[in-house]
Image (cartoon, rainbow, N blue to C red):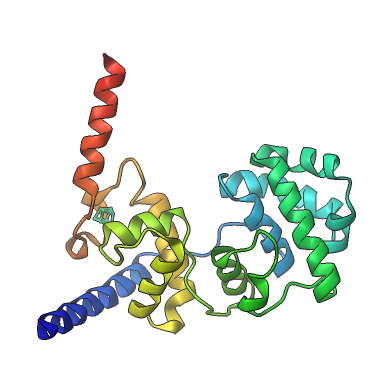
Length: 235
Ligand code: SF4
C-alpha cells in the first residue's frame, strides 16, 4: 500500500511538472492584469478586485490613485466619499472599510509602506494569503506562495492537482508540486488559463494545451448540474 502511494505521488509530480512546462509554453507572458505602479497600488487594486473584474478595477484606479496618493490619504479620507469613488467595483462599503482599516495599520505600524514579508502582510486587516502572494509576487517578484483565486481553485481541481476546497490547503498542495522558482509565473499562468480557456461555464477542452494531462475532475457532474438548471428554467 505504501509502495502504491509512493508510486502515485511520483506520477502526480511528473504530471504536475508537465503541466508547469505546458503552461509556460502556452502563456510565457501571463502576468497580473491589474494595473499598478507600486506595491501599495497593487494592494488597493487587489482589495477592489474581489467579486469584480480586473478591467473594471483598471478603469477606475488611475483616477483613484491620483486623488489618494498614499496610505495616509486613504486612511484619512471621508469614508462616504471613498465609498462613492469605488462604488463601481461593488461591495463598496465593505471594501472602503477594509481599505481604510488596512491603510491606518500601514501608517501606524509600517510608516505607510507595504511590508515585504508575508507574515506581516497577512496581519493587516482584510489581507489574506491570496492578496499577500499576489502583491509580493507581482510587485516585488518574491515567491512566497501561490495565488489561489477563483480561477486557480477551479482549474487546479479539474486538473486533479488538489482535492481540497479551502484556499490555504489548495495552496499547500500546489506548492508541494510546483518548484518555488515557478510559484509566481505559475500563479499568473493558471489564472490566465482559467480566465480564457478553462472557464467556469464553458471550458474549451478541445483547444486546451493541457488536454492529455487533464482528468477533467468534476466536469461531467458540472455539465449535468448545468443541464438540470437549464431544464428547470425552461419548464
Ligand atoms: Fe480545463 Fe478542459 Fe483544459 Fe482540463 S482539458 S484544463 S478541464 S479546459
